[in-house]
Image (cartoon, rainbow, N blue to C red):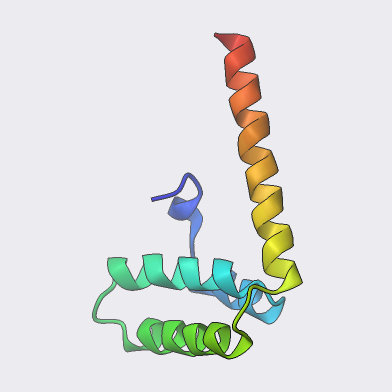
Length: 85
């Protein structure tokens, strides 16, 4: 579970998908599907996103930008924690 997974919603996943952040959308759908294994709509949405990712065969520029932002944020948090200890 990532730090922000407690805030994951299907709406957030749809928004990420609509904006082209397919990897993040899939991450959220996977988390939600694991929490709600009987929810057919979540399973369908995850399957659709995963198929789109396969069709593209590579992360989109938006996915790469999002991952880079998350990585930078994690580095900043780590640096801040190191300063306080």
